[in-house]
Length: 360
View 1 (cartoon, rainbow, N blue to C red):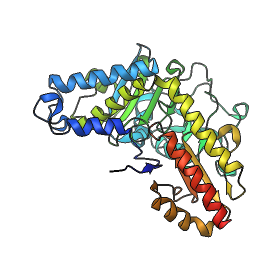
View 2 (cartoon, rainbow, N blue to C red):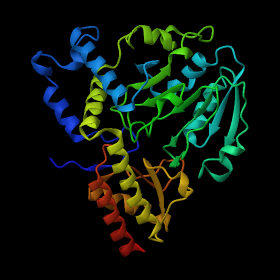
View 3 (cartoon, rainbow, N blue to C red):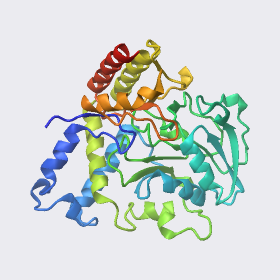
View 4 (cartoon, one colour):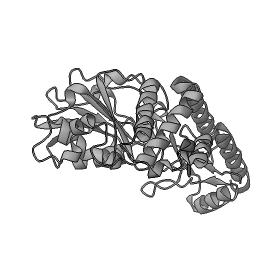
């Protein structure tokens, strides 16, 4: 079997080596006579898998000891509600930055639990840049500030980490976590849905500072209390064990690649190549301001949108998969997560050049 090059925004490509290891262990994990999917989550075998996954993630991100690492369910979308439930902590409102669809969704959900102060938005420019920090209308009394460092749909990435003093900084890193080194100590809470750079769908990682635990809104369900999850090792109820196991394999794979510094170099090179191919060919265009171009999600359009279906059909024939842009914006989008090899980008660039010669 020859695997295709998969540019899906999520659920996204997984490292082939991880899939092969999971395949080998699927029926009989390390001679135990059963699959990880069949293990008790409280048995010593799975507890060891879970603890190793957490330690590997802590190693990769150099997570300080005063942060809890939680492996939860509901994806990043449930975090849109769970964050205000846990972090409003008696305050009337929180600050939010709006730079695309996912931050819009986070804002909409947060408004169900308290006030939301939108400190900056780029909606007037159809989300093509990050508003300059000096234009933000920050509330020094906000419960926290939430932002989305990388917007998957519009391909907009922050080129800075906001500095907001004593206000806890909260970030949705779903589409850029583990793509480069990160100073976790600058954040109160980081969360990331797994299905882009961590592992398969079904689990979300939350990294939360200890002092932010234990002050939930009245009526918060027990299962949505971070403190309860932390006290129970993310096993207050049965967790998504196989997603957790596969995420752990990805963490080990990242270590084998040289860690996040090595991944950052590769990711920067992949993105640089693809943006150059777009910028150097008038047949293609990318609308995002250069400083805010995403390394993970590269949207682009064709000079003639009537050729979009032809482009996608020909790409699929060459086993270049999932290049259609999000339905809300159209065009094309190539997601270049950690598990997308550089050879995939090279193949896409070659196809784009050939397509433009034949149809331009």
